[in-house]
Image 1 (cartoon, rainbow, N blue to C red):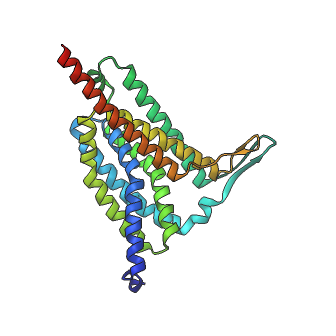
Image 2: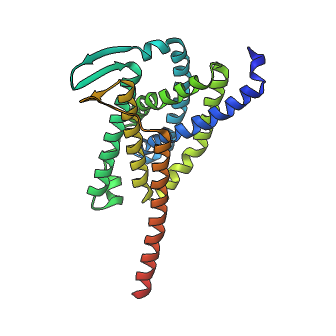
Image 3: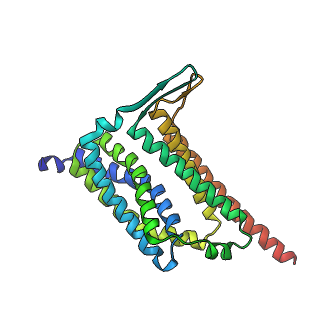
Length: 261
C-alpha cells in the first residue's frame, strides 16, 4: 500500500488534486469570510480560522463516508415522471441543489442590504450580529455542500485514501494562509465586496444547474444541463477583469473631476 505512494503517478495525482482542491475551496473560503463578518469583529478572525479547520476535517470525514457509501449517495430515493416534468432525486443531487438555493439567497440578500443602506459604514456596524455558534453552524452546513464537489473530484482521480487526504490537508493549509489575505483585501477594497457576492451568486447558479442535472430534471421535455466548469471560470475571469478596469477608470474620472475643481 505504502509503496504505491512513492511513485510518479501518485506524485502527479497529489499535485493535481492539491491544485484542484485549492481552486474548488476558494468559493468556500469566500463564503466563510462573508459569514465571519456577521459576528463580533473581535471574534471574526477566530470564526474564520475555525470555519476553515472545520472544512478540512469535514472533507476528510466525508471522503471516508463517500468511499464507503458512494452507491447510496448516487442511488435515487425519489422519482416522479409526467408529460411535462420528470425528476429522479438522489442524495447527492439534493445536497447540491439545496446548497445552490441557499447561496443564491445569501448573495441576493447581501446585495439588497448593500444597496438599501444609506450609510454603508453605519449600516455595516448597525446590522444585527450573529452569535459565534450560529455562524459556525451555517459554515458547517455549507461546508458539506462545498466538500461534496471536492471529495467527488478526488474520488474520480484516485482511489488512494492517503493521497486524497494529503491533498485535502495541504489545500486546507493554503486556505488558512489565504484567509486573512482575502478578508483584509475585502476590507480595504469595499467595492470588491459586490464582485465577491456576484461570484457567490454564480456559484449558486452553477450548483443548482448541476443538482438539477444530477436529479435528471426535465421541464416540458427540456433537461436541465449543468454549467460547464470552463464556462464558469470564463464568466468569473470576465467579472474580475471588468471590475478591475471599471475601478481604475472610475479613479481616473475622480482625479479629473478633482483637477477641474
